[in-house]
Length: 514
Image 1 (spheres, helix red, strand yellow):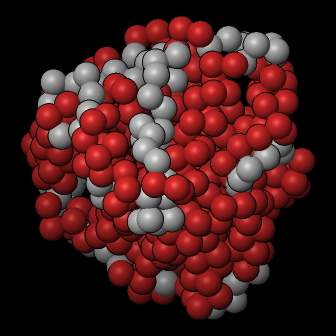
Image 2 (cartoon, one colour):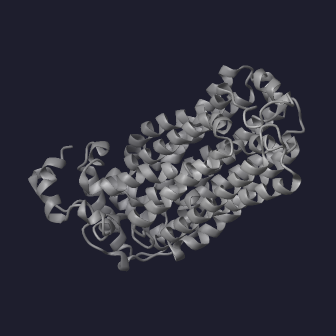
Image 3 (cartoon, helix red, strand yellow):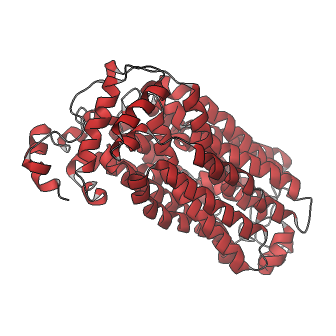
């Protein structure tokens, strides 16, 4: 620190019991507007699978896939295996990965609100390019701009929600991002169901309707308040105090305000958050920022949501039936996320993650058995078994919706101290989008190679992640966001790694200039 003095790293006292405040209407409106970015993320996930199964879209941009689709003797598992088609879906996530790292210093230095606005503008450009696309290059450029929007939005919005929410309701408020995502997926599936009847141009309408939530996110972002945490970090201490009083609905915010000031003083002494995040005191948060989003994607959920129509058509469903089935899974995901919002601050993060993992493992194994026994190279599932597969997949989606879906975003966004929060969220988003890109690009090839074994592949990963949560993730329910560092010092494993104050203070002189 300046002057060579020493101070504890960030918040040093447990003031959680002194926090006051309630969930005000002001916070609810601000968070609803901010969470709109989640609906765009979900819309892009849901719209891709439906559009890539539409004949008009395939015939215009991917004629080889269109011809393979029309061949009755084509291998059920392999008829959609095309790297160009996969690139249409996955290019968005690679662009999002890169832009999330660019968004980190912008979010930290200029505030969460600016990143949300940047994301909205990128979405507007991307949706316009996609709807008007006349060739594959224009199509991919549009997807890249959408990816930039996702990188900025996913980096800033979960942080915004976590910082605006009162401690005792932080989990539920933060999950508004995932709820908006699931609503976006469901809306996309229903739109695809309708536009699939508007051949050969229905796909343009599907892609272009992303303009509506993008406009809400952009214009709404201009009227959003900055979070008090960010305002204090940028030096507007008095304004931050007044905003905190406004969003908590009480004047006595001394304890929470002091935590923010302490965290801000330490945050401003850190010149390179990405280097600081590698220090021992941030080791558990870094591990969670890498593994939580990785595991979220390795549940296999994006494979189902990206390619639900394609997947169901591969199983023998007719075109309309496959879109209807994928719309059903989107609706189920919305409802289960609502249940999670109601339960997360009562039952806790660990309970939901572990119970969801157990149910998802069971569902993946059941689907693998059904497909392995009843679904061969050129066979079609009977109506009874097809309905059973859809039912089990819906149960899988329900379990994901109450566990890894929302909590894969919520947990990483609430555990970082202020000085590394933007950098930590960038890592979370980058890792999430990297594995989303890998799965999106490889899933159709994996489905062709593994066949029903693809579901066992994901079941194995869900087993690993469930054990990981049981062993390494402490319960964060009810812990103030600026006091999360104290939690790791009490955990049976992480307390061996995270240094106590004495160690921190002795090393502060070296770290303050990092």
